[in-house]
Length: 93
Image (cartoon, rainbow, N blue to C red):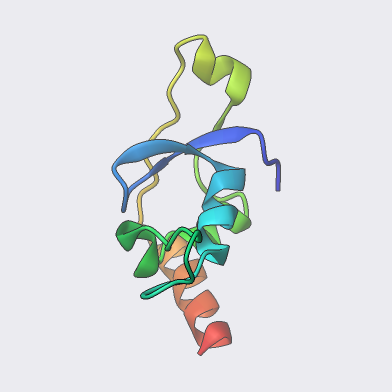
């Protein structure tokens, strides 16, 4: 996975770097130790990250993004993407 690529995060309704997506998932949920940041609420129930990890979301490079280009929004309802998400949920569960 290329960490310097930008995609549109549907749960957060914002453009995000693919590396930030992974970092947010590693943060704890609920009550956290003093000084630690909790996971964002939008990330807690996210099912989009398998597509990010497998490079299946539309992305642009950071340079292109800073130049004004925006990536397309991933269609989470496409049959292919639904299969990838379901397969990942089965692996995790």
